[in-house]
Image: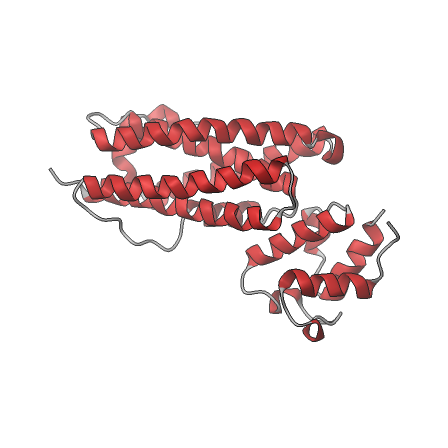
Length: 191
Length: 78
């Protein structure tokens, strides 16, 4: 059975978001000087690119092709929160974003009768996502002396607020397409 | 490290952005030198790394031109 239009849209949206994440981290990895952050960020960039491939392959195995999309979740994100201007802000926005990604994929896994190809793809990605949250959290802890613990906490608060706004906006904008996810796991909307 | 001069910082901005130094004059608006806003983020990260300074969003919201940015770096540099 072919994917529904809504499922195809959602999986294509995930793919585009992974591509945009990869491009963002790739540029940053190119910019940074050698350091433990550069090391982990380069792995993060490679993971995101790999995830985009997983979704492309998943759609292929499901007998379809991704919808071409220009914008991704991250674009709205940066618009709402403002462009990060230092490495700490980049780490903070990444931590908030990665938690949102994990939440979203968990919600998708809760869809009744989720296809095995989709389930396998999400589970594979989630292994990396957990590491992403861990390394970014550790990096932020390591920045406390330089940026100040309170400043980091304030920054995280600001990005969480932006995240909630963007997520609510995204759900409202694409309500018809994402309805199958909302029905599956409504409590996951709260973060 | 001695406090960098505006000329040195301007030279570095040209290098980081990969544009001809002759285009990077103090009065030039930064957004005219880059193709997208991510490039400005990358430049901010590199300058902070180079000169051991920290920028905040509030700092950069008042920066429009190359000269503004050079002033910001110079006044913040240790």
